Amino acid sequence: MEVTRPPLNSSVGDLRSSLPSSEGLERKAYPLRGLTCGLLALLAIVIALPLTAYVYTVASRMILPGVHVGSLEVAGLSVSEAAQAIHETWNLTYRVTVVDTTDLSRSWAAQPIEFGLSVDAPATAEQAYQVGHASDVVEAARQIASSYEYGRDVAPVVRFDPTMARATLESWAPRIYVPPTEAELAIEGGEIVAIPGKQGKALDIEAVLVLLGSDPAAALDYGIIPLAMTAVAPQIMDVSNTADELKRVLAASVVLSAYDPVTGERFAWTPAREEKARWILLERGQDAYRFAIDDAKVSEYLSALQADLGSERYFNLGEATGGLRQMLQGADAAEGPLIIRYQPRTYKVRSTDSIVSIGFRHGIPYWKLQDFSPQLAVRGLVPGETLTIPPRDYLLSLPIVVDKRIVISIKEQRLWAYEAGTMTRELVVSTGIDRSPTMPGIFQVQSHVLSAYASRWDLTMPHFLGIYEAVPDFWNGIHGLPTLSNGVRLWGNVLGRPASYGCIILDLAAAEELYQWADEGTVVEITP
Image (tube, rainbow, N blue to C red; front, side):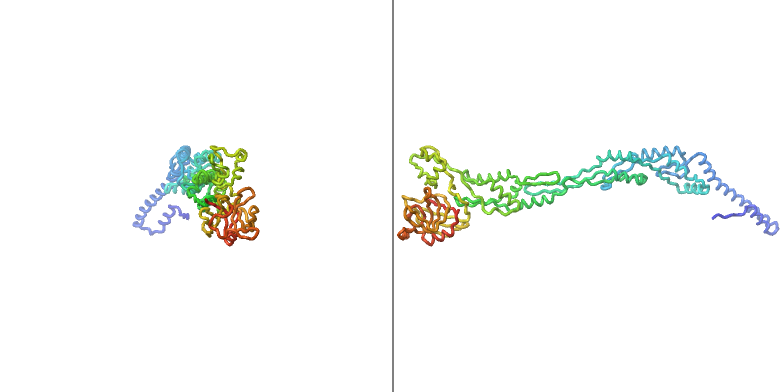
């Protein structure tokens, strides 16, 4: 609030005229006059000093004391001197921290001007000079007093050059780039190793330009240039689904079973987890991992199993591979086991051999030998030559019934029936007499004839199971006690001794029961 006082002389005159006229009082007025003059002088000095400083700074274009631009003191400098100092400090010496906003540990030092940020030194120096140079004298005086007492910070005038900023950001982009990490999937020691991918990141140049352009001064004020980043996804980020599917494949129950119809042996092979892992062909595609069953590796495994069976036996590799593939994919095992097959054999002909004796020794009717080696029917045997003999399973022409088997011993005159590997019945039989013997070998139930008739011997054979052709169109088989056309039943009292003309004879009840039980395709093994 401004107070208007009357002139000092008038005040003093009024004060004097109001006092009593006495000598003592007059003498007391002299000190008051001296004090008044001192105060006036002091007031003049107080007023004169700022005015003098103001006049001096205006005349010399000097910046007032206490004025600074950031940490740079520019007090007492001329405008041109201040502009030079501001340029050197802010544009040449000053450094900002360039920081990845998604990872503050990634930072770099740089000059602001690299990113298009510069301080307009002349404009800033002029603003510093304007402190205390307001057109209003009272306001100017107030600014001067405040600058003396508290100092005055002048914000730099910041310019932004987006073209320069873009050029720098583009050059920095490869340096800032963090490549994504692709997911990995592998099989090690029969176990699945799955490593998920990680996102990378790339400099978002447009976003950084917007940030800098919206408030250029803030970067210099805080000393930070924030780098906006954008996520870069790997081509393969997640392999969990494929890994789970691989785990299921490796955990799948795989049991490869096989049956040898010649020996009656059963095999069950269970590959180890590590072995199954070898069969998996894992490939990395452009956007995912894929796997398949490597048939070549499966074939290696199966070939090793096959080698253990010996050189004579084998099984169908394609069928076995398909079965394993189905089980790995979660399907049930095949309805039946693999059937083991046999390779042809060789035999060196002796001088005492005949085609019949060779066939009998190998369980193959002579005419089947001739079918297999047609030259035998043309020229006969040549002693010393090596014949190729049909394989031991040559007469197994029907699909194998794996759960049933009939074994007949000529020596013991017994028949045994097996189901699922367990003997279910033992029966007394009569086989062929010496002049018409029953042939040892591996045969099958080929036919069911409720009542077969052998015209050669005028025999009716009940519940006849045909098992092999001794000669074309002449079947030997298993049947009940036969009858002649006159109704006489034969051999009822000789069971247990050779009696037939090559067939295997049972009593009537046993023959009927076996007839009902034995399926066509059931293997019949006849031992000497």
